[in-house]
Length: 250
Ligand code: ADP
Ligand code: TMP
Image (cartoon, rainbow, N blue to C red):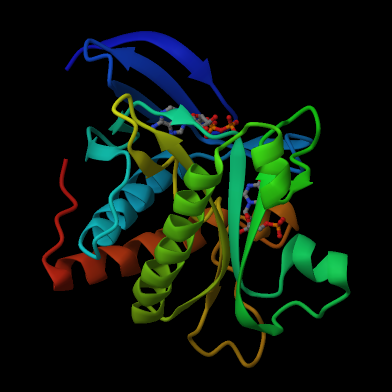
């Protein structure tokens, strides 16, 4: 596989064309951002860890019957994925009240939710990723009714599989964001990344009642260095993958 021209540089990844029109070459960067890019830093080792973490998560999901754009990890910071036409949506699933949900509804962070909540935001840096509901998505032509039903079904299935994965490594899956796209043959698939940048992950190991964040809230809220937390997540996921015979090799 040959790496060709850069197609896009986002806040966390660079996307390159390859000699196969249906395949992209992704490079994970060390850049961390928060507040829609308002806060920015270079954190050595972050690209490497996120590339490893999302690769092993996609493999663990595959073992649970959930397909994604992931093809293979190429190196510490690079992977190959299927090229998708992305839906301009941030698809958020919540199991526990936290972040913008807790703020919006005046609920204490950590309050359990009686059912998982599926939320959508329009993916637009200029507009600050505003909230949008199902009717808005269909009315604006961002996805058809049928596509939205499939995206929602997959988001809930990803949540169930991720809850299983994280509970097995003593981590509470509070909430997360995914993105979905469509391949050239019209298949709707999970894409982008699943990392501690895009999930809230709280350690279930005893910290005397205090929340131990193992995710990007450490950076967003100036609570500490993300690297040891991301290393801890990767090491536990790797152990789970090994115990399940799920491969995580280049
Ligand atoms: P952002 O664009 O939010 O700054 P990134 O730096 O992570 O985010 O850039 C990756 C970009 O690539 C995102 O816009 C994402 O929607 C897009 N993307 C992710 N997976 C695929 C894929 N398989 N095919 C095409 N585009 C993708
Ligand atoms: P929120 O509580 O700030 O709305 O975030 C919910 C979850 O979605 C949290 O795990 C972080 C993730 N997320 C992203 O990955 N990217 C984003 O742009 C936003 C707003 C949230």
